[in-house]
Length: 289
Length: 291
Image (cartoon, rainbow over all chains, first blue to last red; front, side, top):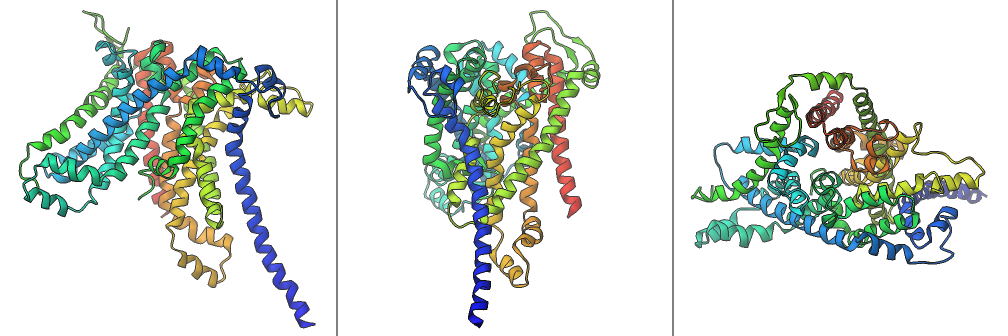
């Protein structure tokens, strides 16, 4: 009799706990759906003719077609935009990695007058959004005859990512113990050998962080691309091309869905492969370690 | 220090500093200078001089009705980012930290929109908002309702905010989740032994311990709201309809590259910098005040 009275109580408290957990899971999964559904919708609709997208965008394609993709590749030259984006963002990434590694080595391994001034200049430049420098930079690029060329995007984007990259690199280099360098230096290696052979390999994790955010910021930055390349279709990177699609072919739903898919899928694949590094890279500075 | 010879220091510092000098510091100062002149064109013609107009552009900032809209929209966006981005991210982070399974899955999924360019997201939402057969109007039609002009006067601002906020929640989610995992478990255990329920634990342990992380998130969110450009530009170019959806960034772009009023645009850009400094100082001040 007693056991029968106690049992339901225990069961009840266990059940209550699991109900709470189930609700939590339902909310979390619902949010996952909210996050992913728009992308799925676009991918599914990219395989339908535009008329069908307009009629029934929630069902699977009734007549499966690759026409939108054929259009995207023939009319819009998406491949060329990829090539331009990789050229631009690749150069930005390499430039930022090299310059920030050099600067942070100088800032952490030397003592000199004006060091604090330089440090605060670097930190202060984080407060300059692209808006506040773009018009004079635009003028300079015109004067140098570079407007409309990939280099016109590369140079300002390197400068735009450099301060933050240097701050991340300084933080990391400060934690590297000096013993190895000391040993190598005593053995007769010069500073540059120490830098290339010891420091750069040791800094690989933070260089990866720098590479990831420089690449993605550069790749995704429409503002600078738009100002520096506008009108020179041959050199359009991905974002500029997308913006043109949206203003020119805004009524061709199938084509727009296909374009978004073409842009999103490669990023998604890379993201799935490198997600830990990417999440770490993009939240660098905000999250320690 | 270790390295006796000082000259290599120049080789380490000069290339980077040169870049910053040429592409950040000098343009920044020149931008301030430009705001006091009447620039007829970006590049001066030979022998051309720009007229000094003093504070005219600054006076205009305060009387320009479009500017007022842009400032208000940007301030609204700041408030919304704090409430919805940081707020939803916090709720999700607390929930995910409680569950044992699928943690990594949620992290991966929630963060995904952050890596997608705002331009692509804008294009995607354009398909949802389209009047003729866009996704939202198809849903309305299914329920027998009239289609809505989503990017029309009444709803455009909200419709631009939704994807902007939605796409970045994952970013703050990861920051807050990392902050949560840094709180030692024994505090929660001690609280549980003292009879503190799960919900109270959030109030008395999680929130106070997360304060520095909140500070970082809120600062990033409000300064991020100042830099909004790509998404509104793709969804509603030139602040369509009638400049109602302008943000500081889009209005500055339109002033410079749409209307070729480079000096006034420089003044607007300066305002963005000043607001950025003010709001991040303000957030710092507020969080210190509470402590």
